[in-house]
Every structure is written in structure tokens, then in C-alpha cells.
Amino acid sequence: MLSQGERPVGYEERGAGSPVVLLHPFPFARGIWSGLTEVLALRHRVISVDARGFGESPLGDRGYAIDDLADDLAALLTELGVARAAVLGMSMGGYTALALAIRHPARLAALVLCDTRAAADSAETRRARDGAIGRIKATGSGPYLDGSLARLLSPEAPPALVTFLRERAETRAASLIAGIEALRDRPDRTGELAAIRVPTLAIRGSGDQVTPAEDIRQMADAIAGATFVTIPGAGHLPHVEAPVAFERALSPFLATALREEGENRR
Image (cartoon, rainbow, N blue to C red; front, side, top):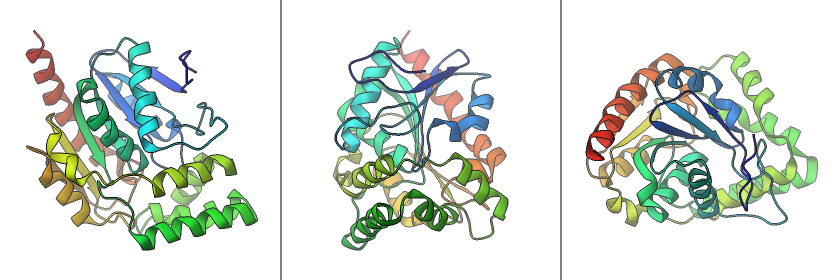
């Protein structure tokens, strides 16, 4: 469904209880969470959100920054009557979750950062993103997606999983380009991590070919009390490759963090 706020946002709600927000990785929309949503909705009010240009969220007539996505989410939570929520962000969604933690800390009850990092892109990575934008402009989204999705999985992932991702990936060239630009231009948040004061879980697939383990470990070390967990046999999207292990790492954390949140608000 589409929110009715000043900046419409595509989202879906499932279940009841303590709110949990899911922020998707690039280049997907909220549908990439379908299996996890069903599991979490047995115990929580799950709100999965589309970033600008993905799923039902309109791109608009200009690009956007990661900070804009955090502001979109804060406005959506207000519209839905959600004062505070646990927020899970994966990859690009993790950048948005970090931005929310810094820009709107009062909206956060707990934080889950999956296969993401706090640092800005290196010069080499920025050049690679510029190259990807150039390829999309020259040949369209199809060749770009065909050449990039396998890297989001572990090296041992079966071809069927690449097909699974291809069927769910965003294909609109303008949306992909705007997303890549937002990823490329995001700020370095490493110096802001110490300000995060909510229960935090950092997760990484052991076979992640995109985000080095050291980047996620250092991010977790900089957040007071954060826990770092590795999901064996999974890549950059561990909830896709190892859904049971991912849920087993996530659910106890959410249960404890949100129970404490409820007790603190009494």
C-alpha cells in the first residue's frame, strides 16, 4: 500500500505487537523480505518499507540522499502512529537505518544492521558505481542486473538463487541509477556510531562478497553493547541463503530488546 503523507511511501504491515521495520537491500523492494515477514509477523507488527523508486514508492523528479530515506521512514512511522520501532536494515537499508539512528534517535527502540557498513565509499568503489551507472545508461538495466546479482550471494550459491533474485530485482533504469547515486554519495558515519544508545545487533553472512567482515566488526565495536553475529554459508543477503539461521539469530535479539523497551516505558 502507499502512505498518504507529503512524500508517499510504499509499505506493507503484517502481524501485531511490538513494531519491527524492515528496510530492503539494493536493488530490491520490500518483497525481498516475504519469508522473514511471515515468521516475524507471528510475534510482531512488521512494517516493510520501499525506498524511493523501488516497489510502490515513487522516485520523484530528482535524485535523493540516504538521509532522505531516513526522513521518509520517520514521517511514515508518525503517520502509522508508531512512536518507536526496532529497525532492521540490510545493505542499502542498513545505511538508512544508521541515518535514522543519527537523525531521529527517538524513533529507534532497537537496531539490526545486516551486511552493511558505516564508512563512506572509497574512491575505487565510487568509480565502480560510476561505471555501473554508465552501463545502465548505455545498455539498460538487464545486462547490469545479469552481471551483478550473483555477487550478492555466496560463491557456493546455486544458480536457482540467482534466478530468484533476478525475478525480484528492480528493473527501472532511473530507479537503479538514483539508488546507486545515493549509495555512492552517502556520508561517513563512523564518527557518529558512539551516539547510538539502543540495543544493536550486527549480522554478516560468512560468504559476503560485498562487505568485508572487518568493516562490520569495527562498526559493531564502535556501538556500545552491540553484538556481532556471523551466518555460516550465506552471502550479502543471508536471509535468502540461510533463512533459518538468520531467523534464529534475529528473533531472540528482538524478543529481548523489545521486552526491555516495553519495561522501560512502563
